Length: 132
Image: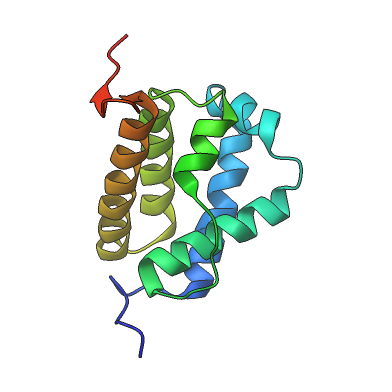
């Protein structure tokens, strides 16, 4: 038996937010080029990210992947990109969802973003952030 969702959102709402968000990403001057350099198939990318969020929020088990490894291996993702990503994501959530759902999803996104940002700045040998 799967645990209850983290907050009250549907799979359809998740898919819609992801599609709207990535339409905005493609036009964003800082992040657009970062994504354009790596994403060749936008529908496939959006489907994978929607599966990630359905897994994280609804506890579906259709996502397989390692976000930390993907972001580290991309080579063009910088710690400062997460602030821009989260700001845009928060804007999209507020535009697309009721406030209570947007707030819950935003909090989860910020926790995940903090972990990814730390992973990109950590010295993997010693686990200490690289502040250069």
